[in-house]
Length: 272
Image 1: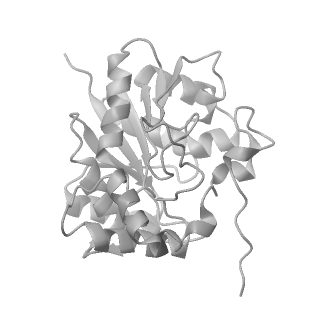
Image 2 (image 1 turned 135 degrees about the horizontal axis):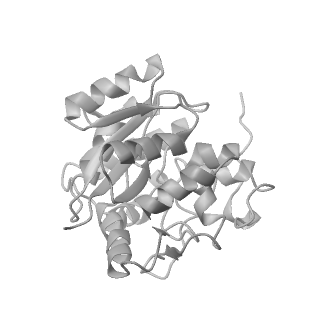
C-alpha cells in the first residue's frame, strides 16, 4: 500500500509584522486559497490540511478551509510542533510535508522534486528538505518527514524555538535523524537574493504584482516564470528586495548550531 502523504499548511491570523496576511486578497481569492490552489496541482497524490489554532481570531481561517473544501485541524497557537503532530495523527499520515502559509508563490514542481527525492531514496532518510542548505528562492520551502520522525521530534523537543518552528529539533540533531537535502538543479543559489515569501507589506505588493502579471495567462506558473518576469521587469524585483535574506534564523543565531550568520540578514530599519 502506498504511503499516505499529508501536506500540512500552518496558518494563523496573528502576525507581528503583517496581521491577517493569509487572508489578504489575490485576484479575487485569499492568499491562502491561492497557495492551496498551487499545492493541489502537484503530481504526487497527497492530502492538503490547513492547521490553525484554537484562538477565536482563527475562526476565519476555519471558515476559509470550509469554503475551499479543505480539511483542517485546530491546535496550539504557539506550539506549532504539536499542531503538526496532532494534525498528522488525525489524518493518519505516513509521510508529512510542512509548508508554511506564507509561501503563496511556491512552485508545485519544486514540491514534486523534493517528494521525488524522498521516495527515490525510500528508507534512506527520516527527513528531507530543500532548506539545509537552502538554494531555491526564499518562499519555496519544502520539508518532508516520516511520521516516526515527527513523533520523535514531538517526544524530544523542549526549546521554545523547536516548538514554534516544528523541525529545528530534527535538523539540529543529525546524530538522531537521517537527513537529506535537495539543492536547486540549476546550480544557482538564490536563497538570500530572491524573496517570494510574505512577512512585510512590500512582500504583499510583490506577490500581488507577480500574480497580476502571470496568473491570467498561466495559472500554474513556475519559479522560472517568476525569474523570467523579474528579468523583464526588474522594478518588480525591487519592490521587496530590501528584505531579501531576512528570515527567522536572525533572532536565534546564538541558539542554532547548524545555521551560520551568512544564512540570514537583519531587517532594515523602518522609517516613519
